[in-house]
Length: 487
Image 1 (cartoon, rainbow, N blue to C red):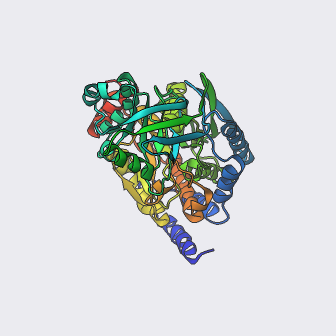
Image 2 (cartoon, one colour):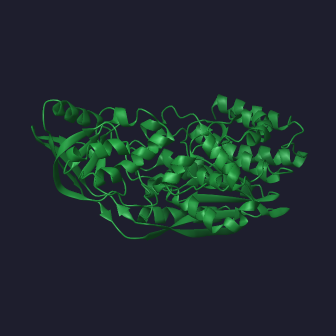
Image 3 (spheres, helix red, strand yellow):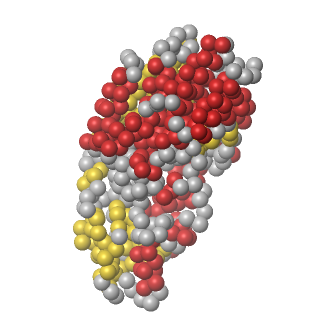
């Protein structure tokens, strides 16, 4: 054991014995339970072994793939091995299934040069598609309409610096709608250069729910895109692209849900979740194998206490997150009749960096209610920050946020996250075992504290109150473009 880890555990134990009288003040027995819980994860826990089993045995877990299906069955078996009786696979539907095939692109004039290229997820195939390139810097509807005569029959190369000059939800909506608008203007394909040097490629899906893209589209290496742009300054450039993707019709996949039944208020519940699916470039160790392993480890440790929490705790591993929170959105719809009794959603999907605390999605009442926990138990894990932050709609807590459920997203140190996110570099060797275990401990201690608290941390907001929360951070208009929100 590293000395720093030993000091951390000693500090945790001391903090547990000095809890203030507050929402989270516990009886002596509860303090001992929290102590045992954190200790069983930090010393001799299974977080890293679980993550290695997931990534090595199943690899990439694209929703609908055989490896994703295998991972759901494996996860259900894991939950049952912890002694949890109520474990189930809950189905949800997607508009289409999709499988990536070989991809290539090349400049055919004025020079011949192979390019580094990959298709966007859920975009259609292209076989020997040739066309002149048009550089597009402005993707507003008005600009695309004005450029229609120049776009017809052309391959559009989006200028990354211009398109991503603003990282706002308004701009995100423009990006997601641009393939459809470019198709209407007569473009035959859309490409964009990558964000990292050395022609590193990333993958993703600009659309939602398994919609198929309106025209072939993909990403080029950053340096390759720069070459094309330099040639365009001199004259016409012609490309050929080949994306051998396969698109199926409607498909069904499963979420994995396990429940430890509460002893005093079993019909009230906390739900602890992470998405199990990944993109197909690598093994999804950071995104989001780490989160899935943390949920499994929290479940194992809480079940191993042998003493049920006062409220029920559900553990969920979602599918379809990468295609637009499909699994968690389906879950809240399927369980709409009991969401009034869901007192909190805890989500982990920001990689395996050291945990810093919780983001409360703009809810001051949740920040205030959680601060005692942050100052006592979580600060001893280096995760005492309870951040108000802005409302985010980039992972599965968003499904619960829309329903007014108190939604908390784990905040982690993520300075290196983008180097692996959706890239071939998202592998097990990038994960620090101690930080991974720390995150699992934060997840477990928070879940147990909320389940055993005298009262919930905050009310479920009504539709109008959620609307005000979304409007404050300009998320509402973006969600309207996706058909996920109406005033």
